[in-house]
Length: 301
Image 1 (cartoon, rainbow, N blue to C red):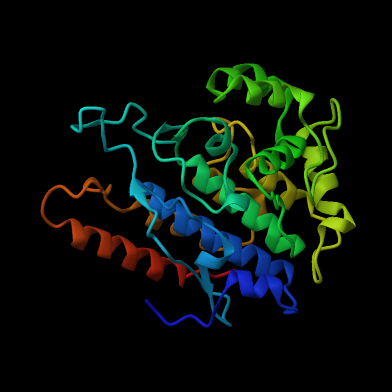
Image 2 (image 1 turned 45 degrees about the vertical axis):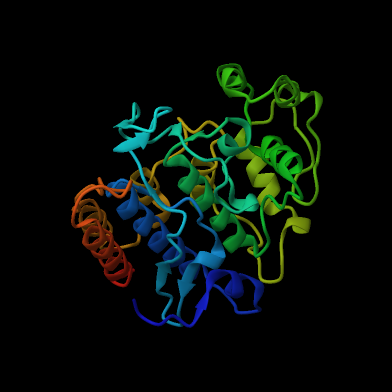
């Protein structure tokens, strides 16, 4: 792994000017790295600006795979045996630990469903990171578990999702809260539910509100960036965009090597030995990491 000069959190908090091209290249490399991880059957589970290393050439590398795990291969059942995950693609969920992802970048299903999640948690984190990169300020700065959920619900939950999601809610208190009786502004970004206003409109209002911007934040989010952001921040994990769909967004239409980059990211074997079984596991992980770092440094625009 090459020596990197800083991380994205420091860049966001600095007064370094960032152009639309910077925003695009940083997010593209992040999504490309996530696409490679997901293509290899790996969830990162702790994506945040502090875990994205950057340099002055605008290269990005995903770091800190300490919380990563394999998905769609095997898991321990209640008897301690190994068995196949029911959701082999890992898009919407399999039972896993709830203690993952720094709170501000935590997907809603981690907050309201007991340990059931999949690739969507990484995609949600990418969306929150993108919003923070644009506005130079955290999108959902919850002070605790409940305030975090309030901020997310106020901006992203549509009525049509609520009925289907109700069965997965952890407690009756959270069901009551999600149905609207406990919704509110939380602290920081949100200003409460806006009736029947669509999710895209609520997200545009949130992103364009001056109080949600730090020094150097964009004045107004552009249409294609908003479309991508809404896709990444779908409350319902089944509707949330995957890594390939995000990479194919019109927001990245100017990146010349996109098709080649996506194909290269997918050209990797699935990491099947996450539980520590079998020989060669260490080599597999090392090779996956090496290929991710190499791929992320070959982007042209």
